[in-house]
Length: 198
Image (cartoon, rainbow, N blue to C red; front, top):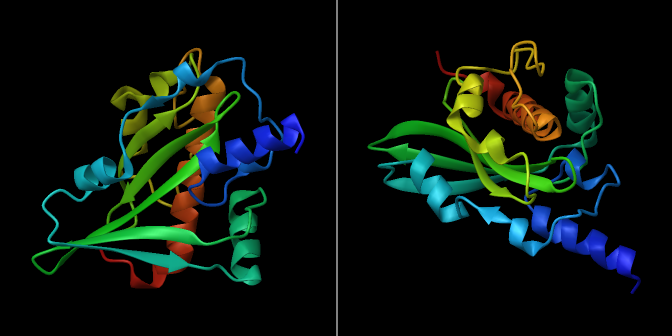
């Protein structure tokens, strides 16, 4: 196996949170070493935070059809890699707590793994950066940036430096997270929009 193929495989394994443009834009090498990888939340920790107090948790796996994948691409204005989407759900005392998707998008060189928590009305409640893999630009993990996504839904423009202000020195990471949130909202709206709660 060539070194380049090995690097690509390692990148895909690290990103392994579902299909994303981060896995397809050809940028797989970073000048930063393994010490640059920062884990802020494990999957268990992130889900416990966004579904605090839940008495029931489960995962629904959605396999978008070719038509649904095409519809997503039309909504977003870019191609979406085909593949399953894992959607975490929660309930507390019979009340629906909404949806959470763990995903990845490309930063400057490496994928950023993050969670998007969406309320039953399909508006963003919280975004958490879980793993950042570069030595610079990790300001996107701060709530000063991430709280801008709260209450956004699939109809929100989500345009970097228009309705979402990027982090200085982290333009690519800001753009990646913004695109990822927009994609997750479109996916959840396509999947659950007909069940939307007021």
